[in-house]
Length: 356
Ligand code: IPM
Ligand code: MN
Image (tube, rainbow, N blue to C red; front, side, top):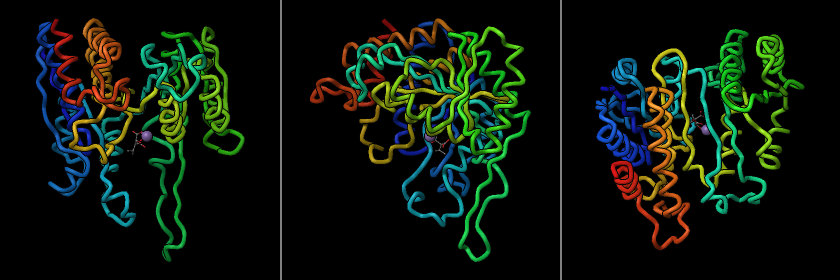
């Protein structure tokens, strides 16, 4: 089959890691007889430099006309240290999420047997941990209005807003995910303090009767932050709002041993986006040392969820597992650092493995 894939490498290590996922997808195309037509689009700081905005209309058109979007990362330190910058690269990512209607971000957290020893947590705690964070992605404090500064500049404010409709659509997705897994869903909120959290609870409570086979529990976010580290194995599906999901999924990545390993899928109304959860990691940009596995596994998610090609997705995951066992990996997870692979070598290794 033929697929059109929007390729948005973005900033920092984005281009390097996306290039490896493209190699892997091309190998999958050759092996399984598919053709991937990659359409390049500019985003982030790159796009600001070129056209003055981080998610230009031309890039949006490419995404809208594609079967899936493969995304790298967005962000540039020159903006991080300039709080007065009028346009910021991250606005591109938020605009893309909003314009594509990507209301759900799915972040699977699982361990790799060959990497258990890389986790800062005790092996007996992490072995077999396997859960998925479902993060609401187009609402909450990331988008709520009003936001800004008081006239004299002495105060700043953000607003957290959720509608029942927004909570309902993502909760449905959470329940459906739980049904495909171990039928347990933990709703993470701060209902002891926040009105939006109470709306979340009330909305979920109103839906549990439609999913009697799914066991639901509720947890305050501070407690969840602690339990993720203390008992990561107890979770199955974790459903939460935008900012809590942002924070908890970074925290959860520690379980696997490296943030560089984790993929994500953002799904919703228009074309789905597949991207690693790590950021642009500017310190490593251009050095050919970044771990491409998060992006390669995002390509696997794209094959599975976006293009409905489960056998092809499995081929990619098998290749990744084999590379971990063979220690054909970048320096962040290599057992023997002196023999660590470069980013591009990992991509070559994986592509070759798939073609074998
Ligand atoms: C993520 C990132 C983004 C977010 C940033 C870059 C805006 O941290 O995808 O998790 O906060 O959503
Ligand atoms: Mn984040």
